[in-house]
Length: 77
Image (tube, rainbow, N blue to C red; front, side, top):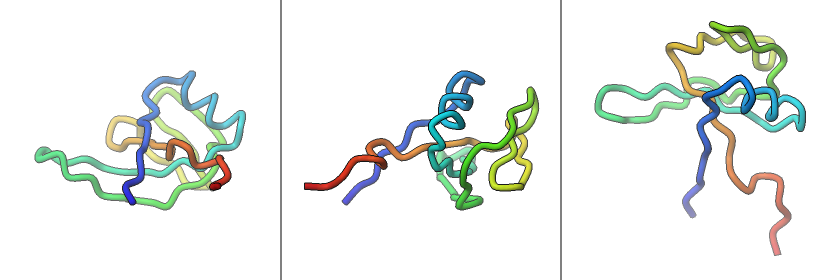
């Protein structure tokens, strides 16, 4: 089963994820578009112009991507 993720790029998208307490994953993407999950992440706690604090850890916005799983909150069946 493939999982689909949305990249959170804007302040508004990050604020929305924080507001509804979505689980946000932290990933890096290299030049060959290989995705590496850098941190399991958690709930967004603070958003700054250059960083995001998730689950007590600070991540630089210019070096990493922040993603949420689409459909993660829906019940199966």
